[in-house]
Image (tube, rainbow, N blue to C red; front, side):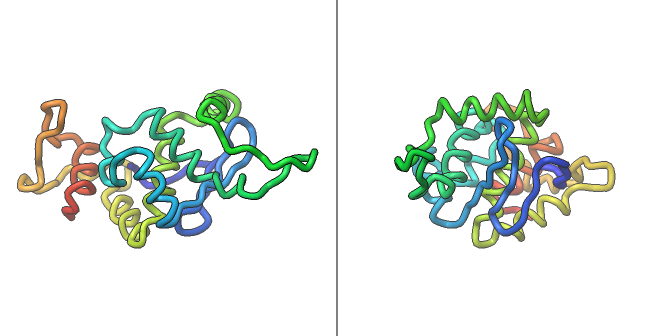
Length: 175
């Protein structure tokens, strides 16, 4: 992940991200409880979710559903009925709307959501700082990784690309 810079998506606090989804501003909020729910829904830990082959629509939808759940707790509609929880179909429409109406690239949306999740971890800010410090001035990751931290990926390639090196560092805890 690169050093964050996007004009439509902002971060205000640990694990809090403000972003437009389908033309409506929403706030993703992650703390330990929300991360636990996300890990349970996905059947894997956060570090496993960081692997490039895991990042896709299913993960993005679950992050959004869990992250905006606070907006739907005990809220009532204009008619006085309680709001129903979000459906995956509704969140899918939000994602499509963000890509079309809001002009946000899929990679930026995915990265913002993952940064919110990581930021919600007890040591999340240090992890984000480490990720950001790996970026040099031109926005590319530092390629001077030690060979002892290079490990093969599921697709048979090694962690020789800057993106894979960064994810390898995060998944193994190497610095």
